[in-house]
Length: 162
Picture 1 (tube, rainbow, N blue to C red):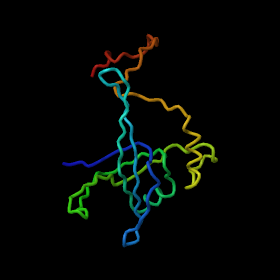
Picture 2 (cartoon, rainbow, N blue to C red; picture 1 turned 45 degrees about the vertical axis):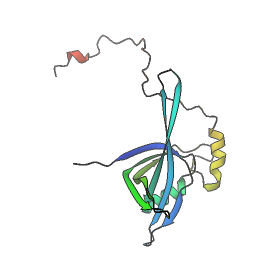
Picture 3 (cartoon, rainbow, N blue to C red; picture 1 turned 60 degrees about the horizontal axis):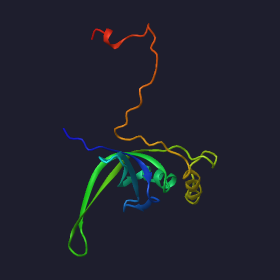
Picture 4 (cartoon, rainbow, N blue to C red; picture 1 turned 180 degrees about the vertical axis):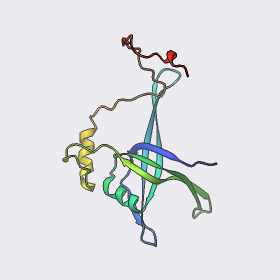
C-alpha cells in the first residue's frame, strides 16, 4: 500500500496566478511559506523557512483566485507531484508541487467587516497585522509544571484495569 499525502499550513507568498487548460478548466498556482523555529546546539534561536509550490484545479482554483492574497494564512491538503522538462539549453529541470485536494482559509481578517479582502485591499490588512504578536512554539517545547491540585475523587489512570 502506498500513500502520497501532504498537509501544509503557511502563508501565501504571491498572488495566485490563474490560467486555463485547453478544456476551459481553471488552474491556479501560488506559493506558500512555512517556518520552523528551533534552538541550535549553541542555544541560539533559529528560524528556517521552506517554500512550497501549490497547484489547484477547477472550483478549488476559482476559490483560491478569489480569496487568497499575499500573506493569507491557508491550510492545503494534497499530493506531491514532481514534473521534469528540458530547458532551452538541454538541461533537465525538476519542480515538485503539491496538487491541492482541499483547502481551509485562515481566520477572516478584521477591519473590513469580517470578510475576506478583494485584490487591492490586502495591502492595508497586512500593514495592520504586522504589529500583531503571534506566539512561537518551538519544536522541543515542554510546558512548565503547574501547581494544579487534583480532586481526591478523580479517577487515577492506574486504577483502570485495562
